[in-house]
Amino acid sequence: MKVLFAAAEAAPFSKVGGLADVAASLPKALRRLGHDVRVVTPLHRRPGAGAPEIEGEPLALPMTWGGQEVRPLVRQTESGGVPVYLLDYSPYYQRRAIYGEPDDLDRYLFFCQVVLELPKVLGWQPDILHAHDWHAAALAFGLRNMAWGDPFYHPTSSVVTIHNLRYRGPHNLVDMLCQAIFYANIVSTVSPTYAQEILTPEYGEGLHTLLGLRRDRLFGILNGIDYEEFNPATDPLIPVRYDAATPEKKGFSKTALQERGSLTPDPSLPVVGMVSRLTEQKGFDLVQQVIEPFLESGRFQFFLLATGEKQYEAFFKELPQRYPGRVAALITFDAALAQLIYAGSDFFLMPSRFEPCGLGQMISLRYGTIPIVRRTGGLADTIQDCSPDLSTGNGFSFTDYSAWALRETLERALAAYQQPEAWRGLVARAMNQDFSWDASARKYVGMYEAALTSR
Image (cartoon, rainbow, N blue to C red; front, side, top):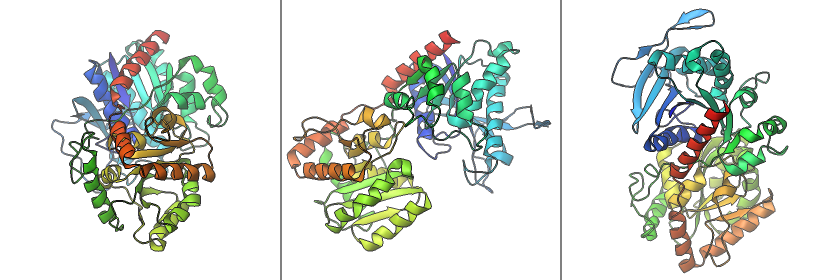
């Protein structure tokens, strides 16, 4: 099967969030199953930065845009054996930000136009055009519209994956995801629970009725993580490598993390880590309400790596000053430090109001760091609450979105940490969980087959 992925970001070429990881990892898993999967994504580069060194001449793509002839360049490379086409068009993608520019609508409609033109120039006819989030959502209607008069696209079906229903485009009058939900052959989300949640008024962001009409073509497939990239046994970014048979070596990463954050060097004190976006969706209003009594009593240390809304940035920037040696809060993005937080923390906190899938909880399990989560979306699909004796489960979870529920769950987690022998068993069990892409990739193949038969 021939599948063309279209995504606004794809690691390692660009990354803001989990979409980039999915656009990098899922194609590799599908290739391992024998499918011809390729990725097209914009080449984002900051002003003044030159194009990356990529062997081979770029392809000049002749097309009309805004009534004028333009010739954007497409640079072909590969990542993990997957062909990647990088759209190099400086007027739109030589920016300081991947998202949030005033002309985002034009930038990503242009991207969609290139995606539809590229296969014809390459002479490579995809069976599936797989668009990710609102940035590529216009492809669903574009493919349907072009296929009326262009035999090249008669056999092609469209799949649109919703990574977060809340983000539907930069213009209030142009709802890109709404259009895609209506026109795509198949609509998917990134976890089974989220696929059911968005059919309700609470999580449907006003589109639950429309999504209900597509219920028979709505799939929920859990994201995975790249087990080669996120592997404590080989990770070059942590001080000492370890695996499920040697979880005690996590302590070296904990010491390094405490040193990096100027935390009191105490191996017996649990560290609660967060790598996130500072938004209400991620539960930071709850964290604000409950964290200070724990810090005042010295129950745990807290290490945050995040950027986001100014109100939260201001709160967490001030926290280390009030609790020196107990809090580290870095308001930035640092991929290497994120790896150290996953490896060096004892707990990973994700009290999300809603979470379509979430990758942080799966990465933390891989590194033997126990998640504390709210039971929603992909968090509900991946984290099973621990029994009191820690003989079952892989984390700690709560249902009610309330400060009381988070506080009670933190108390349970901290009490569990005081059971050393049972805790070691929990860490080993967490590290032996399998959230690689292999199982999910096979489900994607089944979804693609459904898209072809439903076209």
